[in-house]
Length: 248
Image (cartoon, rainbow, N blue to C red; front, side, top):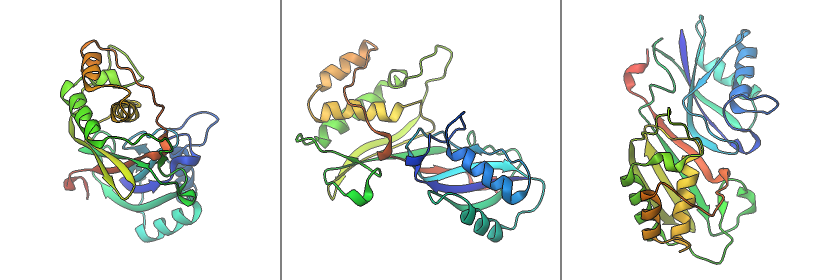
């Protein structure tokens, strides 16, 4: 039987989702705790691979287990045992051919920048301490140029001629509300570091370190430049959706 779990996490204390030697990751933490509860070695497969320090409001992962799981009891035990920075929201049986990653219809990421410093919410957004205000209108024009270019291979750190760089971006926009600048982007898939590189380029435009014409020329010449190192802790995997027919 195949089970799908829905979860959220604060990623600031973890080295990303995917297991790696000598580092604590979300995937490893969840696998270990599920294995303890079910008394069997469990391997989970996540719907996405968030980087070190990145958060998730809605994440999914599947695993195989050949016995019936009591949902209420499982959720009680797992959330009692697991780190306080991870919350398992739900568990459901799905069809055996469903894959948490490959059957996801789309993913939505959100990035939060704040003009106001709030010490109790540290590492949940990027505090913009600089004197320069960010021009939202210019950044929305920049993101439209980036999406329409369809050259997403320019906005990733992992370059390989054999890789597929095609991404179907359904929407991407910047907005401002209550001292927060918020970036939302929805796509069927994202490349490594793609979102944070796009944000950095947009901010360069928004603080007028780069012009829109310069951005157009950089894309034309296949040579994107950006000046700002965007921290991971303002980034959230906000939503993942599946067809309803995946469930049993």
